[in-house]
Image (cartoon, rainbow, N blue to C red; front, side, top):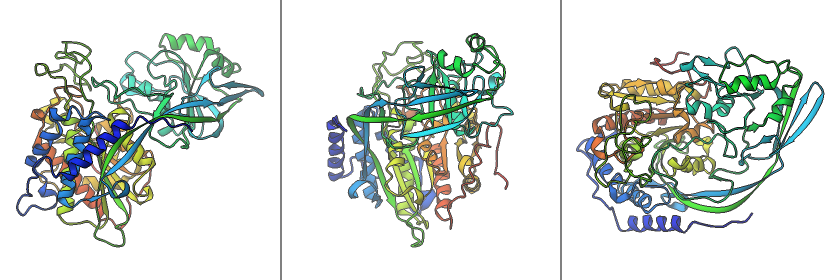
Length: 582
């Protein structure tokens, strides 16, 4: 393959980070509180001190590939050295190089459909379209099931999977459902069918409407929007940090010609179904009896661009020789979205003062930014998680040691598509079969929609999906706090319109089968805007949530076994609470 490197900026950032580390701490490191050990050493004052630098204008919004992100990395490493946290990155350093590839695709993929004994093959670009990142060569065969719009959205009373079992089948859907279906529900139809309904592949309609994946990378969560713009342009058909030989379930789009043949013996004309779908009217059940399909994935790739960024990695070794070669991973992303790309103007799509607030914060508007302010400081997103992770590393390094070892990863490029965590999951610094669980922190410094009634609330996502035991351990850890926090599982609901489960770094590890917990306090009016500043952070709450993560990590790190992976899927959702019974 041809490699064309655009890594000079990344190398400069790393050099800056290493130089700053060698020169000593860029900010004075506060001494530990007297007699404070473990979770009790996690204090609001230290979190505020560190965040005041991490979210300062000096770091220019910490956009991936920027000097500001390098300064943040150096600052974190300074403190890890001070506390005796060991380097966990490449070649004995605190850095894991993350290679971001621009890739072109040559596709020989096709879909062969058999209807009542008559077969027809559609090549990629001729009636069907494969995503540009198709993964490794594979053949997918099976029966086909039509699932209407392919949606499960309680808000509009739509559940196209009710009473259906599509496990092991190729799922086909049409249209975009009734009015009121959230964008993310449309965009995630293929992924949801594969992950939650256990379909082996999906086919949806081509066309210019939300949810078409087209030639993008399948399953890639949308970056968390906002006014940061792009972190530079890429060459190639797609950008990835993941292995190109991964097996990826096919998510394909298809033209009218394909659908006409598929439904040719179904007893319902495709033109009638399409007319109903275009009018956003309910679609009838249609049995595709006598239909089978073979999807032939056959693509080759050429890397035409390489850019570099860096994860920061530290390790605290466990105390038990029998299990110290296994790990609990803790993570947060230390990047943000950089400079504002739109001039602040009232009502401009939510980008300026007076615009509509994001994340379902009904009736709220953006605050007016400071005069001339164009830096997205990211105090909550994810400065709060960055300093929480620093506090956890310090607490474990200077306090009692659990049996199992601990790995702390500050991920780069989450805002650009989970770059750092996807890379770590595919090119791990320790074998993934040695990882008991991953605990992720992203935005824990505010109240959701700034609601004061949520001053003691934290949202838990994903805890029950892979390991019931991990969920229950977190519940027990919370009960040990004084006072316990209110654990809200609304955002864990599989029908969550914001699809929070897929939108932060834990998802990269969950996709590998590792039990995860995602801790967040939800979105607010300053999300991805220049007014996400340190002055708005609730530091006592930030410290209290960090203590919960510490208590949960301590429990997992002292188990004599890994949390059981029963893979029962999401059960805790809106209105749910408490432990899960056996």
